[in-house]
Length: 339
Image (cartoon, rainbow, N blue to C red; front, side):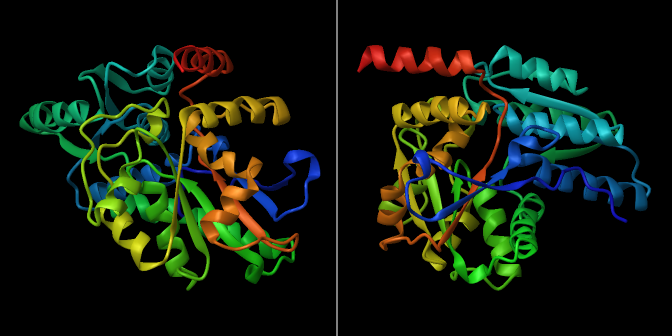
């Protein structure tokens, strides 16, 4: 049986808004992955496959390098720990100290460089990896989201969702949409790959949720072609990519996907409300998707249709380990004070 570095996560029917009528909402709990987020799927898959190939061709043990704002680095560190591989993660100065500690505790070396992910990534590729290669190491670059093998790993979310609904004797024809948060487009691309493999792309609509200040997909759609953001300003730092993966942009248009952009204030309010309702802490990147659970009108406006009690919407709770409850409260107060 092939080794995997992720877990099959629960798909749970959760009731929001005190049982208000509307579609049945099923939440996929990716915060329960070994690395705390869905990234364990794709990044673990990439590292595992690459390691197997390196061992098979005799090129030696891999030295893994990842650039990250936090969650991708933690996923890489966790996967490498399970395979006894050396892992170096470069994070920008904006990364919280508790996240750095988590990555270190997972066994990785952490280097802090740059004011944002792009600068951290450039330093990783153009300096650290070159130095390591000159020492004779077989290096593996792990991008946070823009790699087909990463999407292949993320696509297992779709397979699991379909299996879990069938186990509950629920017809797949009832699924009206899948909702996911979008940063650089790794999770979105994985969902598209999974839907394609199951001949459901275009039949099940995907709603891509972003926050103002990290809404590179939405701005690219308005522009008619992919753009690069010069500045990232949202508190949903896990969505903080200056560009969208080309495959994600192309797939969005090809399959009639829908875009939703939310404010930081709304997303923070949802994170705090979800914590109170379900005793579960989610960071703003995850709260962006969960926000639609509390606001059925956003779902219906995006899909341009009324949803019935018999309809099903799948929410991918992408997870993440960047914030505590205290962080959420403090950030919410800070934003409110400047409005």
